[in-house]
Length: 234
Image 1 (tube, one colour):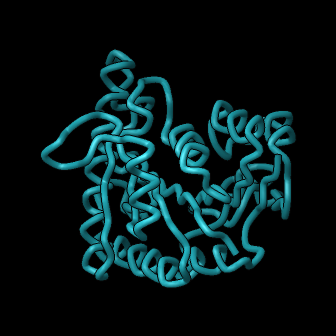
Image 2 (image 1 turned 180 degrees about the vertical axis):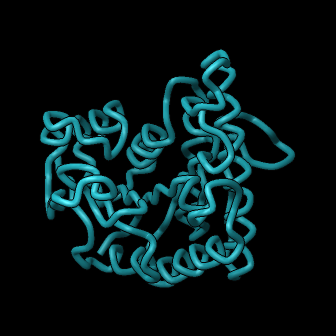
């Protein structure tokens, strides 16, 4: 269905319900799905969050300077990226971590042309450290990187199976959208991702699929064209 995709995975998802740290069993399941997508001939890049270790806007950062807290959050994404790289490489794939904050001993610096070359050579690329700037979330980083590498679609893997009229975890009457536009997300103030990321995708005509990664095989199904979750169109 798609030649090149960007997959956004939250740090909380890698914790697999434990709240903190990385669930070793779950991260290997994710790596197996990524290998399945790669086997379909699809070029795949990934942006990982860091909320399973530290979030700049979380309660533990409430007394910290926002810039310092956001930098700690960026470093958390690098930990997740290295863990996911290891799991992917155990599947026999070549994988590169590219960081927006330079740390040559553990990751390549993010250079757009080099990232695209890795993808052309059928390597999996993981983008870490967000955009490298405070006040920008990994959602915004995912939207930005998707457009920079000319991805066909942004895939946002979450703990729920799409975008709802309200939080389905707290509102039993919430209903799921099959399709929605970015303008509707902004008008309804739906908290699916940061407004800066939503605006960026809308203004640059980047489609997005929001789906659950709790069911095994969903990433492969979405790449294969199945209508899972919610499709967001410009």
